[in-house]
Image (cartoon, rainbow, N blue to C red; front, side, top):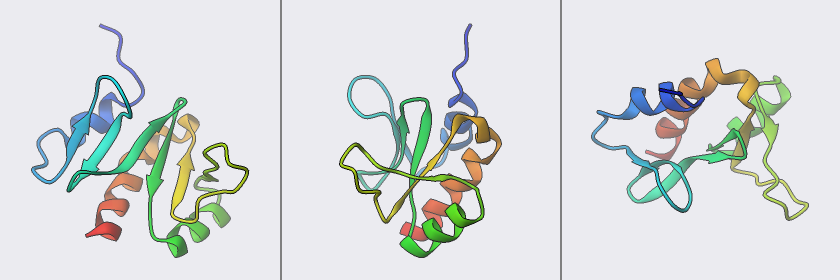
Length: 100
């Protein structure tokens, strides 16, 4: 069976009672209270964080600004490239702490 780059992330959160894994048609990612906090985006992962964390993480090279195609990066999202796959779980855990 072919595994995708998000399988380890999904497995990590699969038994977490406050996280829903959105799969299938439409936006795919991780939800908390019905809202997407991590979205699988064109092979990368867009993660919702407080703006201060986004700025700091981008400055530290942990991710990139997330521009969803509007020409203006989102202040509360960071794009974690697939090349930083080892950071995906940590970023999502940080996001959960930020939004709770």
